[in-house]
Image (cartoon, rainbow, N blue to C red):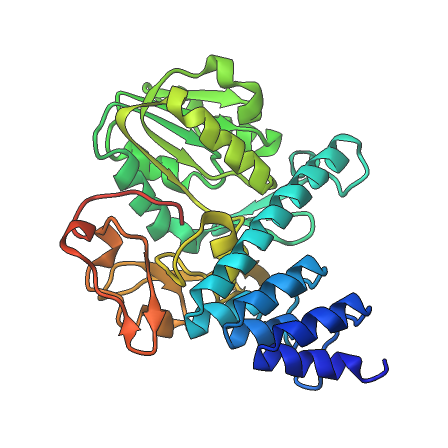
Length: 357
């Protein structure tokens, strides 16, 4: 290090685009962290210098680098309301995640990555399913959220499809609405066998299809409601399932999905599904352990009493100024600026919807 890294941080902070370009073309390290734990990209994003953000991204600056406080450049742009800088970072993240997802799937097919989830052993208890690495596949605290999904996809009655049984939380809730038919796709052999042992195969309106959804599409019909919640897949898988929806979902049908892929950061949620700075399902807090004290690594969502939105416990600040009853609005995000959160227009409100969480 010869001091140029500190210079590029200062130039990024002040928005001196010409100096940043000159330093970058001269080989200055754009991955450098200064004494604050900030990269040049973080400085540019925090102060809304979109042209500098673009230059640094093109030079290979890591969009997903984190400060000691676990904040990314996208978080800084989002919190400060710098929309243009945020969009640049969002697009960089989307492109990177799609590429990495495709690579990861290819490596799995060639057996050069970790053991696939479907070949992994899972353990069941009353309140959770854990994989062999002690990571939570599903936990009982998700029940209220699963019940909300079930209510949404069953609101029109008729024929319901669920992809991913897990603990059976959403399927138990779906049964309460007595659908005409209830089709369940489950790919994990141990989960599937447990379904059979607990009587799911004997329910009159239930059809269980064993296998990955990608392999059983030919066995599916069209449905009035669809819920999607798989484990051990990639963003590319979710995108491909969305491409199948036009042939699976009846006109006027309702689709909902649990976005377990979105990590726990608000900006990284945006990488998956877009949004304007304050997303309706922002997830930037972790629940560190379950009720027995076992370590887990999943967002702990609870319903907000005023807005009705599920949000991470301990992050009440993300609900500040979000309109009352926002969980049923058409709009799924709100722009936050120095003046607060923008107000909904009349056509934004009180229309039942179903969105990914």
